[in-house]
Each structure stands twice: as C-alpha cells, then as structure tokens.
Amino acid sequence: MSKIVYVNGSYVPEDQAKVSIFDRGYLFGDGVYEVVPVIRGQVVDKAYFIERLRRSLNELSIAWPCSEVEYMQVMSELAERNQLQEGVIYSQVTRGVAPRDFTFPQDAKPAFIAFSTPMALLEHPQAATGVKVVTTEDLRWKRRDIKSVNLLGQVLAKQDAASRGATEGWMLEDGFVTEGVSSSAYIVKDNRIITRQLSNSILPGIRRRTLLELAAKSDIDIEQRPFTVAEALAADEAFISSATTMCLGVVEIDGHTIGNGKPGPVTQKLRELYTQRALEEAGAEA
Image 1 (cartoon, one colour):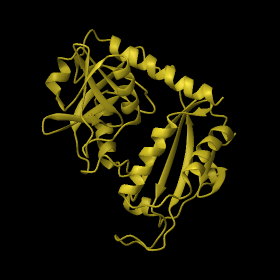
Image 2 (cartoon, helix red, strand yellow):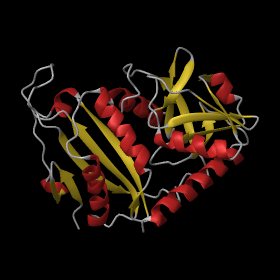
Image 3 (tube, one colour):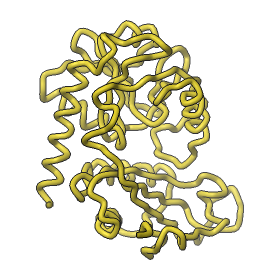
C-alpha cells in the first residue's frame, strides 16, 4: 500500500506528491519543520509541539497555513490513513511559492506538507546498548532556537559522525558542547543532570523540556550550563533525547567509554518516566 502524504490541503499517494520549484523552502530554506511522535496510533507531546511550531513561525514572520486545530487534525489524519501505530510525523511550513527574490513576497501563501514514518520508539533497538557519539565542529547559523529547514550544517556534522562509526555527533563551539546534531545533549555527574541552558545557541527540544520536568518531579538535580568534552568524558553517564530516540544512553564519546559502558540509572529512569508519560497521553485519547 502506498504511503499517503499531505501536500497543501490534499492527501495523496507519496509518488504523486509534488511541490513547486519556486517554493521558498526549496530556494532559500525559508521555512520551519517539526517532528511529532505517534504512540499506539495517537499523536503525543501535542501541546509542546504546537507551541514550538508557533514560536518558530512567529520568529520568521511566516503565517500559519491553517488554524492550529486544523494543523493537529492533519497529524492525526495521517496517522489514521497510514495505520501508523508507532513512529513519527514530519511536517513543514514554508513561506510559499513566489518569484526568486530575497525579500519577503507580499502575497505568497504558506505551503504545508507532512508525512509519516513508522519506527520503533518504545522498544528502540539501541535503548539497551546505548549509542556512540563523536564530537564535531558546529557550523550552523546563529538562530538555532528556530527549527528551520536550513540543515546543511547538521547534514555535514551527521555525515562526519557516521563516517567515524558513531550514531550521533555532539557539536562543539568555543570549547563547549552545544547540542547533538539531531538531539539534545546531557551528562550526569553525581546524580546531577548537566545540560546547556536555552538560548539562541540550541534548539528548545520538546523531549528536553519534558525530561527535565520529569527529573525535577523525581528529585533529580538539574544544572543548566555549557559543559566541555573533558567533563563529558569524566561523567558518570551521558544521554541524548529527541522525537525519534526519546531518551538514549551515550556509552562512548570519541572512543572513550562513559561510565561502565552501559546506559546509566538516571538515563534508564528518565526513559522509563518518559515512556509512561507518552503511553498515558496516548491512552487518554485511545
């Protein structure tokens, strides 16, 4: 069965989906995107998802392509049409189609596309083993807090990590870890979570926000500040989070084993707590 995708108001088979070559997302990277998890056929993390999308659109002065309620309906409809029980839905909004000019067009209509991808989230294949990370230079622009479709810096960093046998890269700037290429980055020392504070330097991760809330409720100390590679190598644990990984332990950085080489107890507890929260949200609407 062909996957059904959403393109500017229509649900169509993926092999029939088309967008204009004059779409500003294609020409300039002038747009934003989001990825939202689906658990048991239900979209989860909805409130934080729509809040971050709203902020990204506002920061770039891009209008909503539809109402926020309609936007979420598209996410749910895609899950249903594709019989997606577990995975993610990617959605993207660009400034729209217009003649190529750097300044904002006056009458362009925002373009909106979305598609689903099945994947194992609750039983992620690397949840038990953890992942390897390497450090790589942060080449991105200065507004990383906007979830922009400008991802060339991340593409180069992810390829660099993959070429060195790692699952993820931790990007470095001025001697400190900013974040993962496609994830938030954390270390744990003496039962305290250390992660960079929110600013224009990192994306405000939805899983980051949720995990820190869950940690606070579980009386796990949190310190929000930049950390160095040396601190990471000396940490008791390290982990990453994102829509596709939820919470995964980092067991090696630049070839150095972290802790005992297995996902640590704080990481495991946070993954368990996040899983429980996601299942509760999914079950409430099942």
